[in-house]
Length: 248
Image (tube, rainbow, N blue to C red):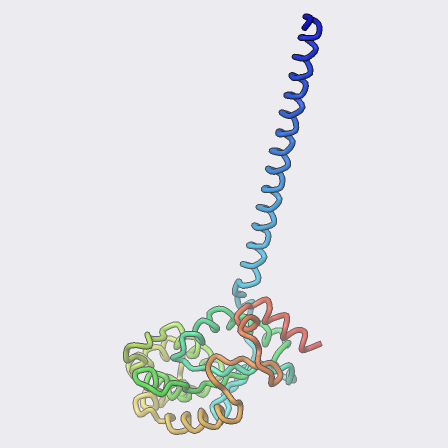
């Protein structure tokens, strides 16, 4: 092989190697860009998911709250009759506490904005102790509160201090103490709580409600009479969208 041929061969090999090197470099750049794009999309989705599930903050004043004779409590601005959000809850129910922590402020805001009529239905779903007794004492105490705004504050206080399902809780002393902290001013509140004055009425209400509403557990959230899926009820943004759509 001549010297010129040998040099040409080496040049071709060098050119091929350079071409391969550039090709591999392009592949690496493409891979890095692809990974970066995927990472950005993943972060964006994560941020969106967090925002969807993030609890709202109570924006301002609450809508008027009224305690009804049957034990239900209505939160709505004057003249707002629809859409109706019914919340069937048990003060001892851990999932109800989670719902309140996650979506409770959304319901307060929707009512304050005049976009919903919210109706609370405290019931007792437990049949065994200590959960049954805990639930009955808490619900009976809540019925001792006749002022709507005070009832709502007490409602939130009960969930904040919800005892474990394995221990006896919601004692009379605790319920009275939390009532004072929530601003309850009823003259006979202490006596009403200690005597568990409303247990029988609450049990009757529970039986009737469980039967007529065909409830299998709590929390059950209904929008205009239809059950809301937990994936909607427990996601504040989805809950808001569902209620606002129902009002259009």
